[in-house]
Amino acid sequence: TQLLEQSPQFLSIQEGENLTVYCNSSSVFSSLQWYRQEPGEGPVLLVTVVTGGEVKKLKRLTFQFGDARKDSSLHITAAQPGDTGLYLCAGAGGNTGKLIFGQGTTLQVKP
Amino acid sequence: EAGVVQSPRYKIIEKKQPVAFWCNPISGHNTLYWYLQNLGQGPELLIRYENEEAVDDSQLPKDRFSAERLKGVDSTLKIQPAELGDSAVYLCASSLGLSGGELFFGEGSRLTVL
Figure 1 (cartoon, each protein chain N blue to C red):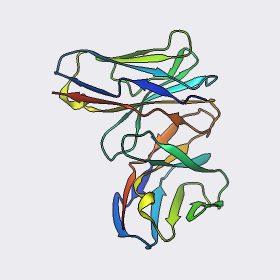
Figure 2 (figure 1 turned 90 degrees about the vertical axis):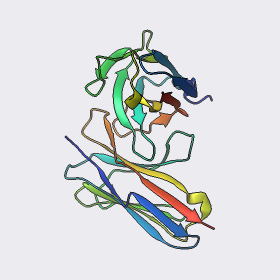
Figure 3 (figure 1 turned 30 degrees about the vertical axis):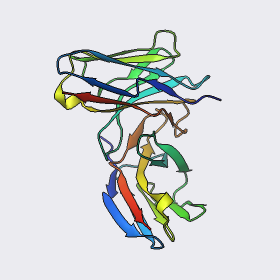
Figure 4 (figure 1 turned 180 degrees about the vertical axis):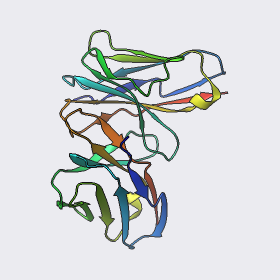
């Protein structure tokens, strides 16, 4: 069974601080996605990483896929209150179309 | 273009009562998913459809949960009878079905079982 473990589970920081969220697995994924979910809404895709070692940047967010395609990280620089939400990583295995979600990281950025 | 539409947004029922949730995916999306999400946790897959065929229902508690997607478009998820532990948000998502492709989620149906 493929599992994705996210850490930390909760994070409360002040505006302007940097943070990193980790997503780890013992399984290899063909691609990995990061979603952000706000209260009362469904998750919304931020990025998809496909190649081992790949780094993608989305404004103040930097996403990295591990060389072995078993882990990923999300780094936020100078966090803002608008970054508050639940961050989810999701891994796709093979060509089945099945997506496995991590447990999520709840981020609170205080002004 | 309309996104994934779910109804109802909220439902409060007493235990042992039945409940049904409806989902209309994005037009042209062949793959439809039902997920269960507890507060502050990641979504857990209940069932995945490719057109009208359920291709992955291994996590669906079939003694009380059922789902259908008769014409390969909209879908219904039913719970009968509901238990206290079923209280959660039920998310519907759709995609083009490509491996690693983006999932588009609805706003979810929040169920409270008293």
